[in-house]
Length: 480
Image 1 (cartoon, rainbow, N blue to C red):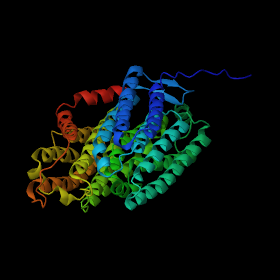
Image 2: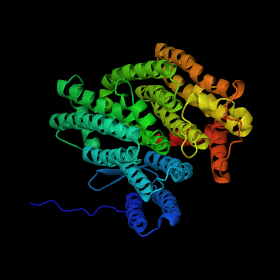
Image 3: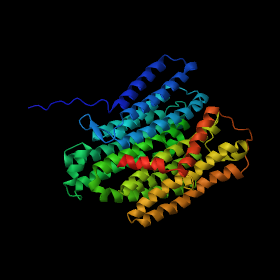
Image 4: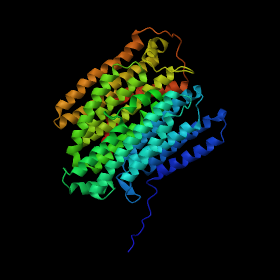
């Protein structure tokens, strides 16, 4: 007796199929484009993202739909996260163009690798099987390793890429080992069947607990949670700023999707176990991220440790184990990705050929060189601090409410305490811009395109903070 083969519904996966096709088109077309016309590769990459967005919204289902024998899921949560990834990646590509041109690394490979990285994120977001998860994760990781080493003449970038690759390989091995333990205990790789199998087992099963530990190690590495954060400051500092901007934004959204697929959908009955582990990870991330950031003099490293502290907040919402907590974390990760992207964009704006403006001292007197850009950066720093009425305040408030609602007031108090510590290094940036004298009094020069996008990016931080209802409503709807 043979099982009948069911033809997959390719329509659900048409966004991935479209982007894969376009990434290959961009790769081949770039071979025939001369350096002076390299902007065509950039335009093709942006059109690819626009087309993928249109296809995603066109085929978006109103409820969860499965295909490829249950290994792929298309649902409202996936649609929202993918849309956020497209928009942020398109902005990263735009910010990066001038930076790459100034350093003579305006190559098609940057955009091809970026598109394949986005494809990996899309697979991670829609994965409903351990194998699909690993496929998407490795596609993203391999693209990022190559992007970090993209500037081949930079020894710092090569060193960062090697560290990232070695530590990433170890984390991937941990994740694979955890998945193998779950397979051994339940006999399935499907996330839906995994949830059913776990519900029929003792939650104290030693194999399940060990598998959970190894899976969490792999997931924590991808987000950059302490104590698996060692790669974050070195990679952020060593990579070209355009690559650092990409790593700090869109992949974090895909990492959040992995937590939701694996822990929430697949291991909900082990909530008591992974909640305790996430409490430890979140506290350590808040502590290490905020305290070590105080000592940083390099802006990229400061933002790296800032990212670690924000990951702590994201984990707080997930560990709450409620819809309000999950939606708060989703709101947080989307808004933080956009804010962090703009923070690194300022470094690109201040930099020029032969000069990387990644030291805090490079911000001195910025308000005199460009009052408007300094004000935009002030909004970004206020948002990262959590000062009302910026979106960062509302995002943190939602997470803290979710924690208080499950009677973990002490944990909310710890998070607030470390946020107060973190306020120092954010406000230091504002002090440098507005109260210190700059050695360089030349007016700040940038393209009109860069000015418009950076201003829109920064003002969105204020606008969504004033009117958060629409986005948080979409986040809640995506999870219910």
